[in-house]
Image (cartoon, rainbow, N blue to C red; front, top):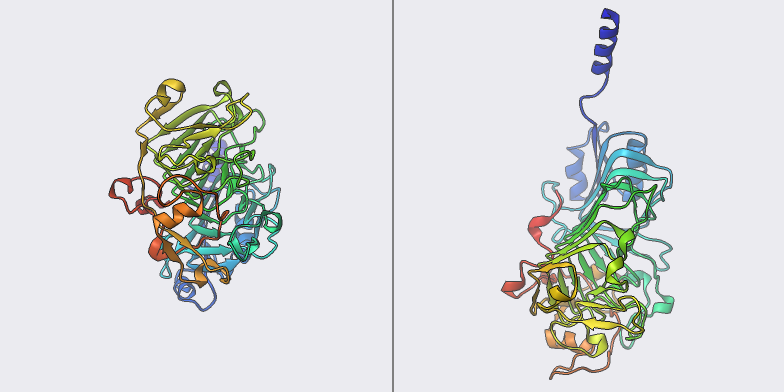
Length: 439
């Protein structure tokens, strides 16, 4: 008995009291951030790399078959590249946090004032981040604080600045590829100029308790930016997807045509998506094909909570310039063409979903258009368009009424002096909030 007690005591002493945490700093060589990182690095639990492409293999080594927390911190700046986590990474007990937007002294993380920009290459063959498949697992995966600008992999008409779909890369900006996760966080990012989807919520739930938080992101000028369609995995279904405090502005239908199959900014899925889908505190403005696409009959939908969102002018593709138009667009099952559902108090009676606190108002958000000759969004001084010009761009006559769409998904840029946050005081509580950056 005494020998057994001694062996147990030795085993306890040999095991760490908590999972180890590793931090990897990524900053361009000889930059201010690199110099600051040198004071923080010990090459045991903290490391520095000049490029994210070099940091990821080290993160994989630390995560595989461990219960570690690995934090990859990326400084303000630009990097071009695609980052791949191969299928077969066993991090089912590990946490991976990839956090951009660090200011050079590493004391402050502000993704919208110290942006980390990932710039697409011409002919981009895949997403910026690719997470293996269902043989790659994480307990927690966090991706926060990046500007994903797909414009360099797109082609635009030289006269109108309209996106040319046939020669642009219609690959989502993030590829989850059925990665197995217990908690997924995608926050504080800017998804810009995507020719088809910012990403699809296409993970595999590690258990029936899996939670997904998509929060505090800008979705700007993308084609149908988001689809809620997780995989089912070993009998597991995602418990809840939270879509909160996002700004969904000027995102386009699959084609600039009201008969196109995909028109709404958020593509809602059926019960296999999740047990519950929560859409709260978001801003939906100037999405010509509608805020949310609803193609399934209500009886086949998950539990929906759509509360405290701002909606403004989301159905101009259909010749509807009412501020409340385009809350839902879709076929709702058997309808042969899209039905346009406007926001109003009566929707609570028409649908069995929880819907309260939603408002309709002009948020007065600025939009920055980019010169076609620019190599990337930071290489120009983007200018704020006035709201009347913005309305005319996608089918609203300046004097009222509708006109034909002149441009289709014209290139936009990130202008730090004119971030697309509401100028209307009453609208400032909706959408992205600086105070909610992931910590």
